[in-house]
Length: 533
Image 1 (cartoon, rainbow, N blue to C red):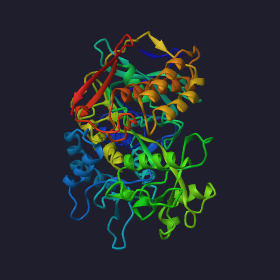
Image 2 (cartoon, rainbow, N blue to C red):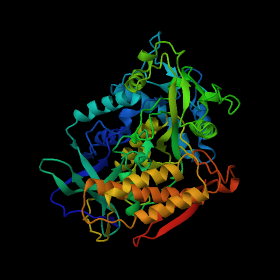
Image 3 (cartoon, one colour):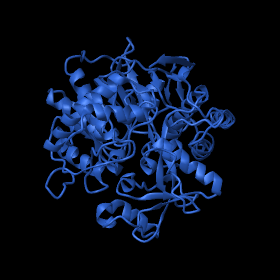
Image 4 (cartoon, rainbow, N blue to C red):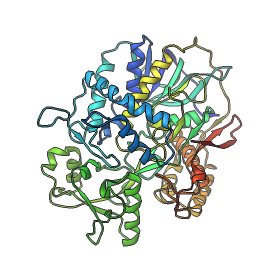
C-alpha cells in the first residue's frame, strides 16, 4: 500500500537515508559519518524547523552529585505506569550521561550555576535535580544549533530540505531499500523522486497535528510512522498520547501549534489555581504541581469540567527575573497580552508527545529489514504509558548513536526496489473535521462512546478520496491513518493508565500490563496483538 503520487522524475542514493532533522535524525547522521558511511539527510521544511527546536524543557541525565542512573530509572518507570521496557530504560539512563557529555563536546552550551557548574533543575516526575537547560527555556534550539553546526561541516552528509517523505521502497525480499520523496520548490530535484539506500532511518518526529490544538509545529503530521505502517511495520503504544498540561490558552478559534508553558516554570515555583483560586493539585499527588504530566493534565481537565471554564490559571508572579529566566515563554505571553510577572497565565492541556510509534528493538530496528526508527516516531518502550519529562531529547541522543553503531556492521549491498501499485489518497478537506473529532473524542479523557463516535467519523471521512496528489492530501491521508490506529488502540485498552484515560474504565488493571501492537498487511487488513511487558 502506498500514497498516490505522480511518477518519479529523479533519483539519488547514499549508504543510509535519514529522514528528519531533529535531535534523533542529526545524532544518527553524525554517528553514521563516524563509521565512514555516506548519509542523505532529508527534512520536511528547513533543516532547523522540527520539534527539537521548540523544546523548552531540557535533557534529563544523572549527572548531579548523589544522582545515579538507577534513580533516573526509578523515576522513568514510575511515570511509565508499568508499561516501560526495562531493558530500554536501562539503556536510556545508563548511556545517557555519556551521550550528554558528547553533545557538550560537540559545542552545546548549557546554563551554568553561580559556581560555574552546569545548573541542574527539576521537572515533573523527577525526584532529583537532573535537567540540563540552555537559554532558560530554549534547550531544544541550542541542541539543534550545536548538532547542525557539526552536520554543516561534514561533506559526507547531503541535505535535502523541503522534502516530504511519501513511502518506503522495498526489494523483492521485502527489505526497505529507499523512499519516495516530494521536494517542494525550484531545483534539480523538484517534484517526486526516488532515493535509494542500504538502510533507511525514520526520525520524523511526532504526530501532534492529528489534534486541533497541539504544541507540535505544523510539520508534525506523523509522516514517518504512517510510512512504516503502510510498509507493514509493527507499531505499538499509540494510544498513549501525552497532553502537556500547561499550554497557553488563547481561544477555541486558535488551532494548530500553541505556545507551551514549560513545567520548568512550575519547577521554579509557579502554582496552578482553579477558578476559585484554589491550589487544586495539593492532595491529588505527593508532588502536587510537579506531579507527572498525565496526572496534572487530567486534573486540569477535571477542574475545567467542574467550572465550565476553558482553562485554569498558572501563577508565576513570584518567580524572580522571569523575563530572563524564561525569555521564550515571556515573549509568548506578552505577544498574547499577558504580563506573567504581574498576571496569572491561562493554561489548558494540548497534545504534546506520542509515547508510542514504530516498534523497534534496542538498536532501533523495526519489524521490517532495512527500516530503523528513532526519536518520537519510535516505540523503544522506554517511555511506557507516559514519557517522563525531558527524556525525549535524551532518547534521540542515545538511540541515534545505537542505530549508527548497529548499521556500521550490518549493511548489505544496495537492493533493487520493486513498486507496489496499490495506492490511496484522501481529500485534504478532511483535515479540520478529523482534528476536531480527535480532540473531542480521543483527547485527554475518552470513553467507549466518544471513541466509537470518532471512529465512525473517521470512517465517513475515508470515503472522501482524491485523485490529485499534493502535500496537503498526503499529510491528511497520513493523519487519517494515524488517527484510526490511535482510536483503535484506545478502544481496545479498557482501563486508564499513564496518558490514556477512560472515563468508563477509570482504574488500571493488571491484565493490561501488555503492549497493543498493530500492523497492516499487504491487502490493507488490520492485525491487533498483545505483547506482555
